[in-house]
Amino acid sequence: MTVTLERANYKVTFGVLVLGVSAYALLQSLVIPALTTIQSTMHTTQNTVTWVVTAYLLSASIFTPVMGRVGDILGKEHVMVATLVALSLGSLIAALATNVTVLIIGRAVQGIGGGVIPLAFGIIRDEFPHEKLATAIGAIAAMTAVGGGVGLIIAGPILEKLGLHWLFWIPLAMTLIAAVLTYLLVPESPERSPGRISYSAALLLSAWLVALLLAVSEAPTWGWFSTKTLSTGALGLVLLIVWVVVELRVNDPVVDMKMMRVPAVWTNNLVAFLFGIGMYSVFAFLPEFVQTPRALGYGFTASTTASGLFLIPLSLGMFFVGLYSGRIAERFGSKTAVVVGSAISGAGYFMLALAHSAAWEIYLASSLLGIGLGLAFSAMSNLIVRAVPANQTGVASGMNANIRTIGGAVGAGVMSSIVTSKMLVSGAPAESGYTYGFIFLGVCAVLAVVAAIFIPSTTPDHEQHLNHAELAMVPGGTLTEG
Image (cartoon, rainbow, N blue to C red; front, side, top):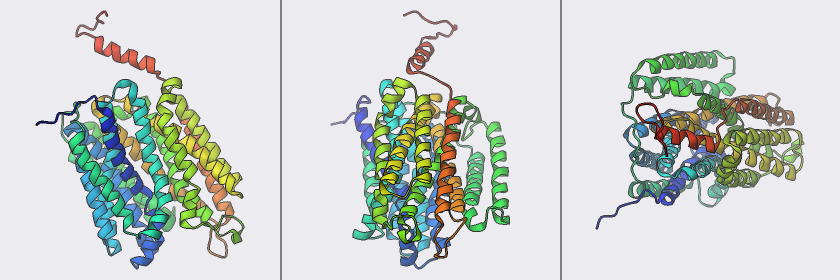
């Protein structure tokens, strides 16, 4: 008996995508609270152990747009399966690692999993009814963001109850199941983008991303104005310019520069960069703030597990608001959702800066961040998907995710420098460092509001009208009636 899957069964496809995206999202942050444990268990240095995060970041930044582009060419379902298998392999290597070198290699392989984000958006666009697109994209976008917060929350209990390597065994089980279900249940993409991958453009993309992210990631250690930081950053900028020139000249670019100049694309990418600065920084530094001993005049002396509880309102807010962001966008417009979400998140950052002496203040600020980030994050993803042709969905959403990652790297580096600019005798940062750091994140949110104002306005009715007009247009250039 032959089993035929109907494309109308989009709910099954959605469930499979949620599983794969959730596993990847968890791995983004699950190891951050465990870095101290990894350092002591594997007998390595603090500088070396940071590469457990850096290797993953660099790998994901390269493979997110590349896998999105490959999916546009070869078919998103096949490439999604390959991406999930690579993610599983990386998790297996990390789970079996007995030294930090093998663990770093495993994390670099895991970074290939960054492709699940653009591929998931592309599959949704191919398979879902038009009226369900915004809701589905919003939910998947919410999962990618929520996973970062959830990873920080559950890392402590996993470490305490199960041990270090279970931080990788659990996501491994999720990604293997997702790979099998994707192969069996997700229909192959009907939309393809003819062409090949330009290896010179892909290599240059990898080179400038590695150089630029390495510079901003290591700047707090090397020094922002050190020769190593400035030379590595300058190399990244030069390679970026060369990459753009090559992409404009090759017949099959990895990233279509004409697409990147579309107003709805570049404005959303700018907002994504600013959002990345704030979101990834608060994931990294809010737990550190609440773990600070009260004896130093601030903080809550929270354990690794307890510090994760302060992020629960943020994660829940992002999840539930993300689920309903599609309906909100359909009612008020995605642009409005990005503007309002950016403003609410800004209020959360400023509250962290100015009112952080009581636990309820942290919970309230975390709730504001969850609502604001969830609303804007999901709306941005929806805007990007709708701004480009279906056969460019993967690479467009991949670059948007990539730019958000770059923003996160820049934000983490700047935030680290601000927080550690004044140290106490105990060796801990002064309270003023966190205050100024959270103000910096609030300013970035305000800039995101300004950038979001320039996003082109499109309403669902207008968009449907354009789709109808495109379908009704005959070769002679006139519209058919009816």
